[in-house]
Length: 127
Image 1 (tube, rainbow, N blue to C red):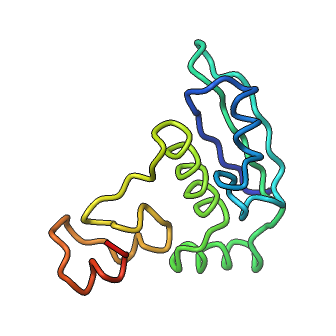
Image 2 (image 1 turned 180 degrees about the vertical axis):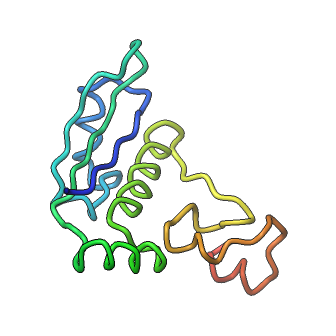
């Protein structure tokens, strides 16, 4: 079964389809994916449905290994969709002291309680 990711964005369908094609906003890692835009229930914006072409090599064992490594295709697609949604709805990608580079699947194993960053960490993320 091919990985699938979905997110709802508070914008009309035609506007979202136009923004999806904008090089400044478009998640290039999803270029090879099948993308569908549908109206969200209750007039709550538009749902973006992404079906990825790649299946995890190695079957279930490969899927478990990728999950531990934080590189599941669906998790990466969700990261990209969240970033697209934030840029479209607010104009910025939200960051916190706990995860200054944003919520990425590969960072989930390295998470720590939120705390101020030291100078080296601030320099690393460009703040």
